[in-house]
Length: 93
Image (tube, rainbow, N blue to C red; front, side, top):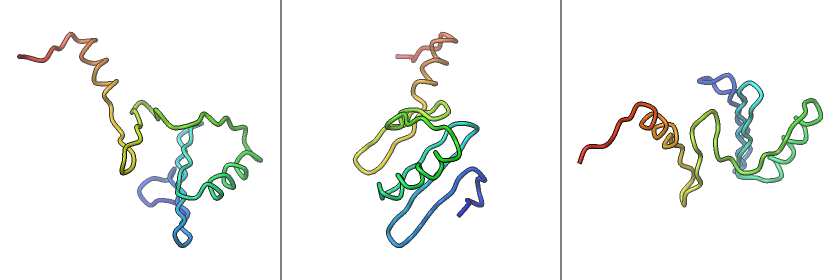
């Protein structure tokens, strides 16, 4: 099922199984709670398109992605640091 908020975001829900597919130009994220369904989707896509599995997600379109106890944390610490360094902004004491 396609997301009504984002045409590049798709969901599959079947009972307790959830798979999420996000596509942006030539980058994609496939995640969910069922490894077999994720593998099946990857296989289906790889029949039509050349794919590289890059392992666990660390960055996507700039923001950093970190696994935490209860899920994931998406942040832009690296981006903020580059801005601070670029413009010479320093924290006051």
